[in-house]
Image (cartoon, rainbow, N blue to C red; front, top):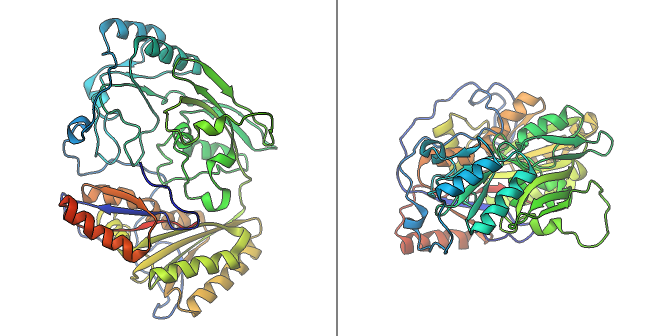
Amino acid sequence: MMSRLAPRWPAWLFWWRAACAQGVSAQQRTWAGASRIPGPGGPWGATGTSPLVRRGSSSAPSCAPEVMLTRERYSVRRLPFSVVSEDDLAALERIVPGRVVTDPEELEAPNVDWLRTVRGSSKVLLRPRTSQEVAHILRYCHERNLAVSPQGGNTGMVGGSTPVFDEIIVSTTLMNQIVSFHNVSGVLVCQAGCVLEALSRYVEERGFVMPLDLGAKGSCHIGGNVATNAGGLRFLRYGSLRGTVLGLEVVLADGTILNCLTSLRKDNTGYDLKQLFIGSEGTLGVITAVSILCPPKPSAVNVAFLGCPGFAEVLQTFCTCRGMLGEILSAFEFMDAECMKLVGLHLRLACPVQESPFYVLIETSGSGAGHDAEKLSGFLEQVLGSGLATDGTLATDQRRIKMLWALRERITEALSRDGYVYKYDLSLPLDRLYDLVSDLRARLGLHAKHVVGYGHLE
């Protein structure tokens, strides 16, 4: 598990990789979008980037050697659960007819995590469509002492959604129905298997947005997002899921259905049981439906991408950003030079500003285009004039905005293509972090190809 971060510190993600990457030269292409902001040492004009990449894509790593079984890699012991028998398969087939998967080829993907670091040996995957079917499955498994591993989009970065041994995988893939949406309050009720990007499209067509946005939104499920209390790129604006999730439907381990699927924002009647399951990662029950509050869709969105000479300037830019942009600030992401190098190397996405040690992506969203543009212009003039940023580019139309966001969102994909990833999530001063890197390399015998840092400031 990753350690929790202290509030208002950067969400650092550090990666160490052993060599398995295939060298690919970055091919510069014509920057097809954003206007340039001149800064000290930064000329007007255009640099290279790639064609538009769909935001939310979650492709598998290209370097895909055989993944060692988790039980062999780590010193873990299988608890005394029963082994699935032919009678069990027959009983499960009666519960979800035609949706019991035992084909080894079909089971290969759900047995391996997205980063291809851990692998289970499950021989059975179930695809229920309703909460009642999930309840029947869990009740049967509880009575038979069969281990179960709930799984959504399997896009997690820590292997929590993949089995360790031969657990039965209960997939929410077919639980993808939208139950209701209220056009006045913006309350969405849906099944847990709905893909985040599909929900985003649905509510945006009705003038709202999902309060959560992730790089993996093209594959991740809303139930898994809630189960892991995902923060996402809109955390700065809309807060965590603990504040935007209004209600849940959960099936407990013995098959009991707990219906807390309220759509009231103000509900102070008794215990707030849903909070037990937000962030519980499937250990207390399987989330089968979600009620979530969607904010109105902003009519004016701008994205600025800046180069900063050091991490101290990144922090100062963040402080200046919050002070000058205030209520229209919706995201503040930072990346280091190593991230941009790998994104260019493996994904052909070129940095749109001059080379810098660090980069920041700033998004504003509001209801008045003129008002937002004026505030953003004043902020950019301040940070460029003071030397906090040395170069920058600004995007206001959707296509260019997506191109800038791709530089941030696809870092994980670039890392996975580079080789084996060793991940830490820490909150320490920079000098301590790099001391820790050296210490880990000495202790674990790792020869780090790259050490990179990226994340969002809160």
